[in-house]
Image (cartoon, rainbow, N blue to C red; front, side):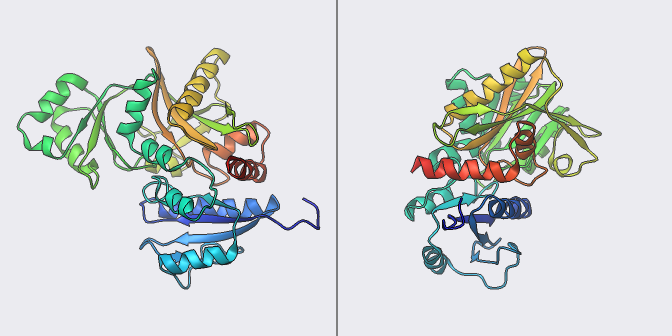
Length: 340
C-alpha cells in the first residue's frame, strides 16, 4: 500500500457473552495489532459479557470505559465506515452465526464462515451429521435430549450402543468446555448432567484412543480454493485429553508443527480437513481436529474461528508454511472482501 492510499478500515469484534470471553479478547488483541502491521486501520469493537458494545482505542483494544446498546453501536459502526469485519470471537454469540447475521444486516463483509456454516459447525451434532452424509469418518455417537433422560434405563441403552470409555460433550461449546471422558458406567449420569447445555442436549460419543492432530485450512484470497496448512500434533502431558486447562497451560501439552508423521498420513488428515471445510460450507479459514488410531483417522470437530493469538495453533501452522501473522490476517481480510 503506497503512502497516498487510504488504509482499509476493518472492524474487529472481540470478547462476547460466551465462556470464551477472555480467550476472545486475546485473539482480538492480536488481530488488531497484526492489522496495523499489515497496513489496515482496525476499529476494535468489544462485546461485553452483558452483550453491550464498546469502542476502545487501537493501542489498548480491551480497555472498556463506556458501553453502548445495539442501536447506538450500529450508529457508531456506520460512522467508522468499515470495509470489512474481522470476527475474533469464539464459542456462543461469536462463532454461532449471530454476529455474522448482524454483519449481513449491515451489508458488511466479514472474515470467516457465513451464518449457516457458522451455526452448523458450532453445533457438534449437526456437524457430525454433515460429516456422515459426506462420508467423512467420525466416531459413532448418540444425541441425548433432556426429555430422554426422564426415562429409566436410558444410560444402559446408551452404553449398549456406544460402550466404554465414551466421551460426553455439550453440543454447543468450544475450547473443550463441557467435555468429559467416562470410563465407568456409574460416571455417565453425572457427566451428562455436568455437560448438558442450556438446550438440554448432549452428545455421547465413542472414545477413540490414538494420536491427536489439528489441521488448519486457509482459502486463497483470490480463488477461494482451500488448502491445508502443516499438520499439528497435540501431545498431552498428565491429562487424559486436550481439555481447556491443557489448551492454555504450556506445561500440560506440546504442539508439534509440522507433526512428525509419514507424508502419506499427513496428506490423509489434510484431505479430511479440507473435506470437512467444504462439507460445512465454510469460508476463509477453519481448523479441524482429528484422532488417528489403529482403525484410521476420525474427524472430531471443525472450528470456524480458531484461536488467533500469536501462539495459537492456526498462526503457528501458518508460520511453518511461511506466512507471518500480519500476512495471515491480510489474506483473511482480502478473502472476505473478494467474496463480496
